[in-house]
Image (cartoon, rainbow, N blue to C red; front, side):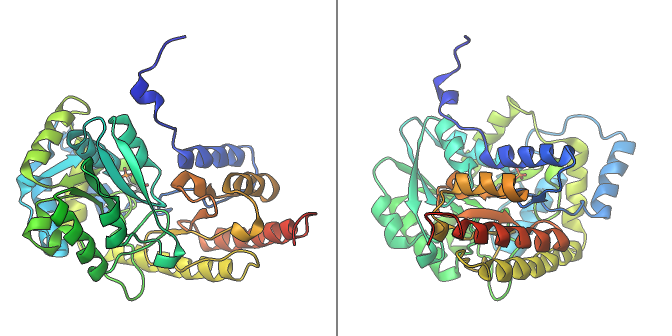
Length: 395
Ligand code: PLP
């Protein structure tokens, strides 16, 4: 048996990828699956972005770019962050990466030493604790629930900080809960961060997907002190329906970005060249396609949440962002793994068990799928939950 590194033995495979692979395999066998497990838009990347990448290929843009990304793209990203997010970054404070995930990975790798603590509001995206662990640091959960809209409070943050705390992960809008922090809530958190001199890694990948009367606030925009303690991570996957392009970025203090660039120079060497040309076009053009997708997601959110709320024994708060609903299954009496396994086997509906995100009383339903699938999935889910309540031992 070949011995693997201890560091790697500490990480668990992505449960979200595991469920969606199982759903895909069942689909390939001809089974009619309602797949609510995927974390990617069902649209394809808008045409002008695809055209720009094609033109780059045809023009022979097939060589390496500088490790930190094409200068024009770094400029475009800095400009977007300045104008849309009130984050005064310059282009040299931007690192282009192979996806938002790599932006987070590079950032945390250059910040963390073994034994450092990273505060993670839970429920959280599955990857955060794993990146922390593979870098030898400790993920420290900050438990949240419906009571605070799945948001961590400043008092909770303050109470969790120890001399070993290095980083707070902040994900607004949140995967999996769809929670969006208000300006006041972010300001309160920023005060605690500044008082203790820890770093915030702000994952803003769902910033464009917010619904109704809410705004997206970048924590780094709230003053010079918090700006200097923030690394803002983002990417093209969600806003531009470009998950397969593998393009993201980190923006932050020069020392962090330089170190992360060095690390990248020895790992991927940089992001894909012709994809970066597509990204330049994505930022430079009108954002109307992003807005059109946002409106579609909002209509789907309303459909799925209303449907979930009508199912006896499920409860569901209204998510304000991203493309996930996060209903509670607590009243069914099943743990989330059993619920999702049986839902897939008995009704061919794929959803992700909340345990993957640190909430065993919930499941995650991605509504990044067409209306007909949403409607059919709701019908099956309702039948499943009703049948459960008729099983012996259930009230
Ligand atoms: N951050 C969050 C919260 C996500 O849900 C995802 C993808 O699911 C990412 C970051 C990374 O996306 P990508 O690596 O495709 O840019």
